Amino acid sequence: MVINQQTIQDAVSFSGIGLHTGNLSTVTFHPAPENYGYRFVRTDLPSAPEIPALVDNVVDISRGTTIAVGDAKAHTVEHVLAALVGMGIDNCKIEISANEPPVGDGSALPFVEVLEKTTLIDQKVPRDYLVIDQTIHYKNEAKGIDIVALPLANDFRLTVMVDYYNPALGSQHTGLFDLQREFKDEFAAARTFCFLTEVEMLHKQGLIKGGGLDNAVVIVDKDMSDNELRDLMRSLGLSENVTVGESGFLNNTQLRFKNEPARHKLLDMLGDLALVGVPMQAQILAARPGHASNVEFARKVRKLYEQKKIIKKYQTKKQDNIVFDINSIMNVLPHRYPFLLVDRVTEFDVENKRILAYKNVTMNEPFFQGHFPGKPIMPGVLIIEAMAQAGGMMLLSGDKLHDADGKQKLAFFMGINNAKFRKPVVPGDQLFFDVTMTRQRMNTCQLAAKALVHGEVVAEAELMVAIVDKDA
Image (cartoon, rainbow, N blue to C red):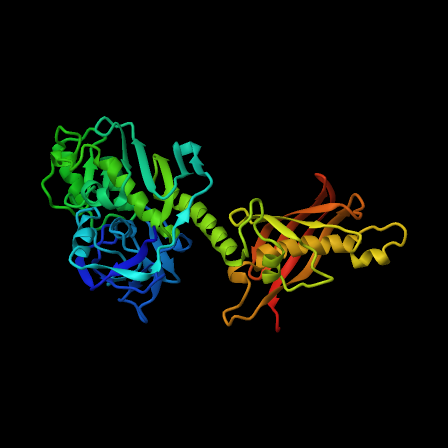
């Protein structure tokens, strides 16, 4: 079933104070056109710069997710993004009058409630899903963090487990299995939380300037008398009367859900995963996630999306074990007979900057007429050229294929180092190329390339390539 993208009909606003910056702020949600995605707009800055909500723009994960373009930043964006995802909104212009959206009660509920004051409208373009068809795994053994995405046809599920070794929390888990039906009632109201031992540390780091007991759940994880607690609150500039309480939470705060901390971790993760830039069809399992791990995981998922987008753009037809056939290759590389030396691409890995391709070597190759009569051997320089063309498929695909004016780009040799030729290549051989980009600076790329026949290396080299305008 085709589901079209959605936006909102009218602009709606919510005002308050930012959790970490303490700045007064108003967030205004505006309708946006198809394929716009989520973009934060700093209306308090000259020219009102836009900050696309993409993982490539994440610059800080100190107790929240901060995105930026140049000097324009938007702090703590995860709750706003979670609300938009949970409401099924694909395109939205998010204006903020300061550098951080208001925290509200520490959950996504205030944003959900204000978005409910307008109407969702269908747009004309189908929703673009990232279908996870391979396992994506992120692991941080030192912190016990484990996140995995598994294939799940036509659905999205998210399961989270947390364990802080604290009696007030214990080990908790939660799961979202139907975003449309469950998000608002089961997850939107889950508030942010922190430990009492963290409060002073966060204050010294210049964070939680807008924090209070009305926008966070504080978990007691150390012995402290009421007098010591009041002294701590005064040092933080808070005048509230607080008690340690007996429930494990400051002021005996009543949780909205028995496992509210776990649900809030799921809420945060939902917002951070919005930075992939496209909704997913996948089963995601996360153990002890946090903003840092969420963002690193989102980077891996984003790379898969970019890879699929490039393949979809240039692939002429979908075939098993083939990424690009010869027609697709000719859509990317400018080379033509008799100098097109790649027949097929079998793997294109954007995350690891690696491409696998091959060329069938036949007696009909024009160079065999003179190299050598009676003993045909493929020239080593052409093997190097073929490896470079395979690398060029990787470098010239996607955004690097054309410049901003639509002019085609070319990849020029700048250097060839440590070239070695180990075995001759003759008619009937199938040359298999394994090329990885090891370094990139501006428009200059370094490639590590190997050519193999029957699994044995016949040639290898380090290649330096410059991406230049075709008309330069």
